[in-house]
Image (cartoon, rainbow, N blue to C red):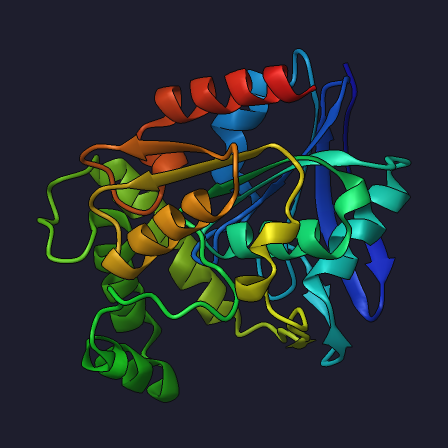
Length: 270
């Protein structure tokens, strides 16, 4: 079993990555309220049979970037190149799920399977989106750099779930994610200028050929829930798994079920 961490220098970035285990490669792409640490449980569970690759995307964790135009898809490809992998199973949650989907559309030959959990579809406007007023106050906090207020709101929205009680989930889990969010905001990292997939994913779902697993929680943001149902409906043979009573951070809130489903899917797709 191999364990390594390192830094990949590519297009103005110094990308921090970690690799565990050996076997077919699996790339885990983290959410926009986290960093690669969110995958600790999954890495531990998969490393006996897979080469688990995870990294901090630009603007997050231990990765640093200059203020340059860049592609999240190209960063994934560069990491695979750096690690000597032609293709991999690609797994993403939330923002990471969008990156995973876009990468699969742009570089299908490099994707053995695709897992999108609580993600989104580039260019897709869900009919179930919450009203724009929902996000006006947090946007004001961001403009004012009131990181504590913003981090608290994001924890309530993404960890508890919109309209859910603050005591619904384990307090230690809430505190962990809140700390990730706050630490990242306080760092005020340069994020670079991400270049979107063009044309966007919304009109290209019929191109998907890799085995697809979609996961969503019933207490997540309604727009996200509907988007994941749309993704699963749009791709013949896609597998949809719904987590009753879970919000956005599925792998943290129901880690045993999440990891079991992911492992089963990867085993069947390898």
